[in-house]
Image 1 (cartoon, rainbow over the protein chains, first blue to last red):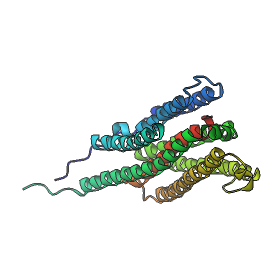
Image 2: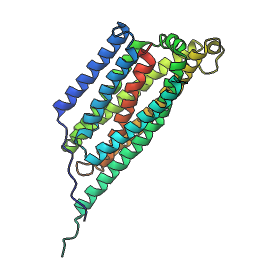
Image 3: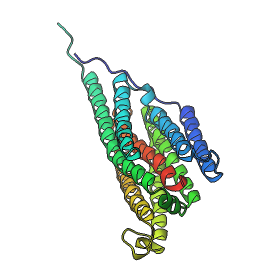
Image 4: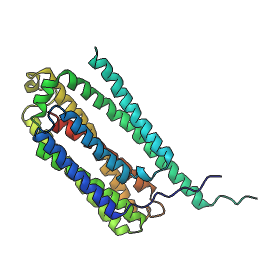
Length: 97
Length: 206
């Protein structure tokens, strides 16, 4: 017999607005960092780090992954790790050739 | 004797399955875009100077404004789903319409950007571009392919939201039957996530 599904809670409007404000603020930060040549030498790392923070916010709150079942969270992690493994595998070849 | 499974419980299990299916589809999309990001990363490391020169030509302000527009459209979509689940159908319809308008706005900005580049003779295989270094040729090739396929996804998202908007207005999508709207929302947010990475890679990293 199927188990009754756990309902994902309806996000609060306040939470969604705060996440949106954070996303816009991070966009401003990443532009400022790139234009002001702050963190020179680490510009790629900084840009990708901020982008990942933004992507995490969208995934957790807009896509509600934070409240989803463990199965879905593990699957999302698996997909991300798969992509990162492919990237890492390629770069060990590209860099040390 | 066990109680027969109620239709409500069965519908819920169906909704959970549909959502899982949507996520699995998004994982395939992740690897689809991932392949292109991989190509970008490898060529960038090989032709750093060319990528540097080409990326400097992108208009950061326009790119940032378009990013803000797409992020805001994602907020509108999240609000549309939340409102529907609370039974606030009218607000949900308005928020879905706002999402569509912002999506069209994003594509309109993208169109003017492409047109400006093509106006400068910068398009794949153009005589102007072929005069440039190998890295610049690759940068603009990747730029057109990646923003093009992303734009196609935005267009598909807009079409899907147009369908959910009509179905919500007709009462076919309700608080109890919100799966189609929720899954469309997931697709829209995913397209937003892809852009979150495209923006720094093409406009900022110089």
